[in-house]
Image 1 (cartoon, rainbow, N blue to C red):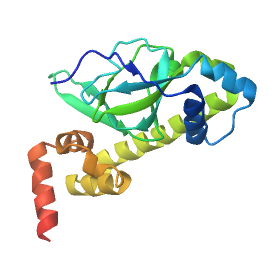
Image 2 (image 1 turned 135 degrees about the vertical axis):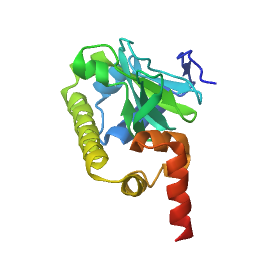
Image 3 (image 1 turned 120 degrees about the vertical axis):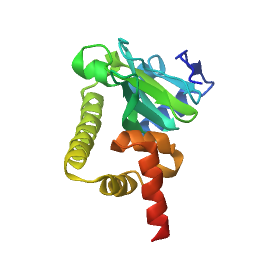
Image 4 (image 1 turned 30 degrees about the horizontal axis):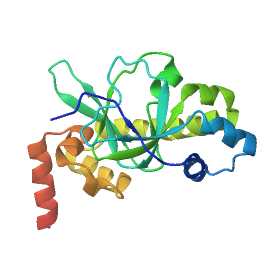
Length: 202
């Protein structure tokens, strides 16, 4: 059962350690002034498997860098079915949509695993141009993935879409439940089972 309580746990990670992790994830060094500012703004948080940190309609004020763990974004269609739209894992982010669009969230984010994250208020992006550019670059990469996925849905058959998924998400595919894989590539779970059986038999 999913945990609809999206509250997180502030961990005991020291500010210095948190800054080091943040620097590592971003790939650049902070000045002492920046470290001091961040020590008051960013927090280490944890979400449990099944938690939903972002709900459709939420007006988010923070985004999250994933230190460890895996999340998925999904919609609920008019028939009440969950449709998986994306996955994010270590060294990636989630909950940037509201910052980019200035609107409420259009989809849910669910933790597929326990997740350790760095919570960063949107206001930090407004203050720090280089950080905002980093997030923008990550977003561009996600848009490219989305466009590639849309092309695949239109031009590839089910087997080709699964093969493409295996290449695109090779590093984490074993961590993603098959029902979410099937939803992501736009097929029924039964069809995915058949495809996997056929590939293993060949």
